[in-house]
Length: 461
Image (cartoon, rainbow, N blue to C red; front, side, top):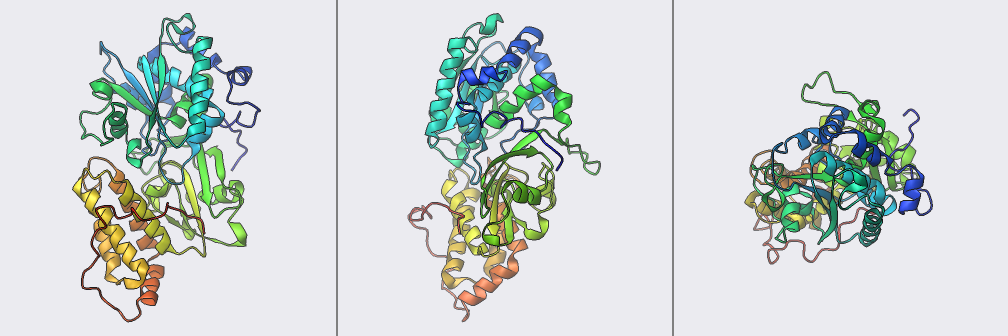
């Protein structure tokens, strides 16, 4: 990787980086001043659209295009929801931004609200982030006192109120319509679409939902221009007409069996191997990597032979994974049993399924029961094919569920079995050498909650 100067994390090493005084001393809110004075909302949207910014929350949808779906002549309120739920295992980059540079997040939020003509923004924050809550609330209070929030911001005629809504913390709350339901005070069940939130979202009004890191990027796009943003990353693939490119800096969270776990910034397109070696300090205890989750648990797993894959919105897909996801990289060393990965994955998604859609509710639960039986030494070789059949028949891609949680549950199963089948078959043969068969393919569900007696998910060896 060529020399790269951090952008999103440039200020986090400064003492008191979370305060308004430090943020303003480094040029903070000057971009907002200039934008309100010189740019129209349509020009801000156009600049973000030209930059090629894609959502950093997992889906990778083009942000400017998403904003353009809002009705141009809507007479009533428009809402902006900031998705700070961050429930994907292995992902904590938003937490770093909110705790160490909350004014950067706020400036991006205000600019995005100005572009989308939103006059109220809700930051949906998971309850397990108490320091982020305190830092964000203090930043909001400072911004109101300084005239960056409230009525007639900096004399521009634009007004915006920002509120923090603390959620209970659940994977499904990261889905944009589940998040909207939760803000409205209801159970966070995702809605069937259409209508999409841009037409009918929060309180049935047009709404934009954007991730924290995405909004932080907006600040720098307006400050330095779309051409600067497009100079970082990977251009569209000539072999894929649907690929709009992967531009800009990206935060990667490296965890698991590495020497230096943490949140690091790199340009999109850096290889997974370089991320682990250069930023993560290599695999711990002098061991080699066996498998790597490239972008949060839902994306699946890469084998050690696939670590040169570029970490952009296309690279992991070409290796059979769901996508780049959130950029949460989880490293498993050569001693880590893949049955443990399979068990932890199934346990997490079975627990987090909201239960609204039968294929997801039943599929994740039965997959967990089968994996649990394999792990306990009662596995059959045919169980691996049965798990693949379950994984191939749940989720949005087969068109059977409202949201993508089931897809997130399916990809770890698919990739683990297809890439590590020999190890899993050896495990079954070793732990069930007599070929003992239970009378039932799987045991009964435990009071409808297959993981209620389990300990929290862990990838530590």
